[in-house]
Amino acid sequence: MARCFICGSTAEIENFCKNCFRERHPMVKHFKSLVIKCCKTCPAINIAGKWIYQPTPDTIPSYVRKRVTISSDYKLKALIVSPLGSFDDAFHPVQYEVKVLAKKDKHEIEQTYEFPLQFEKGNCDHCISAKSTYYEGTLQVRGITAVVEEFIDLAIERGEAHGNFLVRRDKVKDGFDYYFTKNKFVQKLAVSLKTQFGGSSKLSRRLVTRNRQSSKELYRMTILYNSPMFFKGDLIAVGKQVYKIISTQSTITATDLGLGKSVKLSPKTKFNRLIPYTTTVSKVSPQLEVIHPTTYQSTPVKNPMPKKIGERIRVVYVDDNSVYMF
Image (cartoon, rainbow, N blue to C red; front, side, top):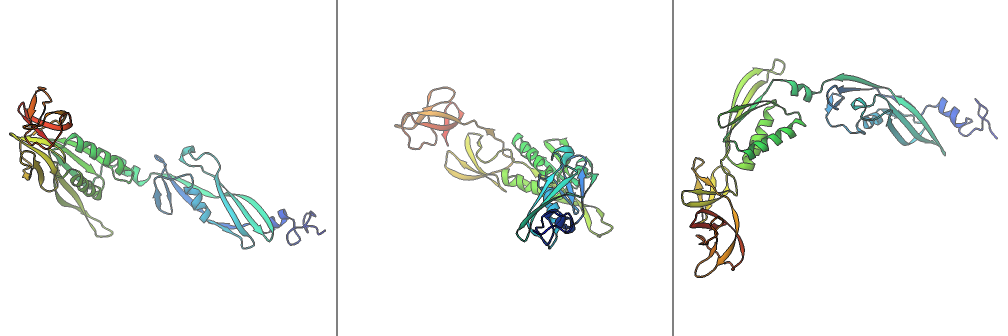
């Protein structure tokens, strides 16, 4: 039986035992160094000049695997990268272990290395922006309602995950002024508001400075958004007329429930918001009547449609004698 030239054990690979062959022929040819910058405030990491704001336990191992070069003497079967410590320790482990499983001829060989990681501490762009008082764009919201305000607050929360921060919010007459770190976010938010609620907007720009290196002009943007006082689906009364809002995009379109026709309303229209009720049909002949939601009297419906006695329907009322179906 052939013996290993070095240790005298049974030779398995080219007159060497597995251990001696592995020592003379390292499985890893070389490691390409990896420098990782970690944010001191949040879990973000910077690799190759790019910030990753939501790293997973496999983010760093995936970069490590790309920087391990296996010797041509072996056929790689598996490359396992594991942290030495908890992923949550100070946001990220500082050491990683690389286990190489490879094949040489008919023999499987395993070897473990410690990967030479370099860590640096700093602040990510998001955290720097969050602490800054610098802003690019302003969104002026007028005629704001609780629904619109909640929509904006949710957009701000989502925007922070992508580096768009609210610098400050000023209360003004009939609304708020929102100051943001990026113009593009202001534009996107204004479009979202018009799509969701309608209303109107007006954009203006003011030259702030010029970039010395690129000669690019830097503008500070302001968008005035006028929110409609009512929204799609609202039921309103203008005098004795009752309307259901169909659209608030560019112009306000509503259905006149009394006439059954589509009409245009002015954004400055004085109106009363109506509360919808569910009630019961009390009479169908000679005219349709329902139980009035507040007086509980059988009251004629101004815009009758075929119904059955006892059927539940949705109505609004203007006064004790004016009930409309919708």
